[in-house]
Image 1 (cartoon, rainbow, N blue to C red):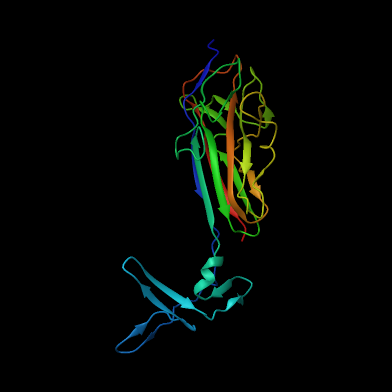
Image 2: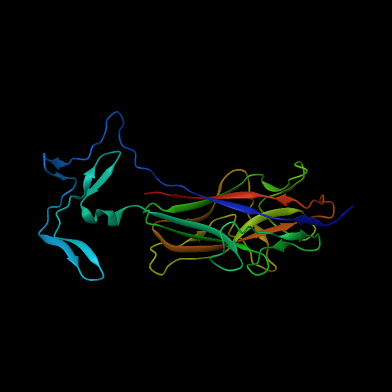
Length: 266
């Protein structure tokens, strides 16, 4: 019986989850304008100065001493800040996921582990086999979580759908079938209020050579990375690892599709 299993490709799909502001229904919201038969003012500013400044190479509109409400307009379902500069406090999420031999990688490049053998655990190493690189940032004060979920819960043969190298949380060893991921490294901008943290079971003893503790990639979303508050410039390198046994069915088309989701609490 053949003792080698071939893995041709992995593909990764990133979804960005935004938090929406929901206002009470059953009413329509209209922006006020000031108009007459000869003019219309769609927006105005109460300020002590400012205006248009120009030169041969630029034009700028500025406002001095604007009167704003601050963030004191609120109810149980919304908070509003009125004023030209209030946009500076608007919530934001930035998230990218790429694969490559070095950060930041290339979108859609995938992780191709190649031929698997019972003699060794195959791992993405960011050198000959692509790693997954994540970058994230958010000003959400309640923190951020990134989850991962697999379509198949393991490496599934496209031609024989019943043949799956099941994924589970384990320390992979040569000769025993298994598949999973681990977070190799994380970092964040020096000015970030909180750290970008590895989360169990993806935070075990894991490197690109001899340590192969992985978390399972299941069909239920699991948290793989997190921050407890505002995160600036968070980066992470994620490794993909797999092993086969001597009785694993040989196919040239094993693969898994995983989805990474970032969620932020504002």
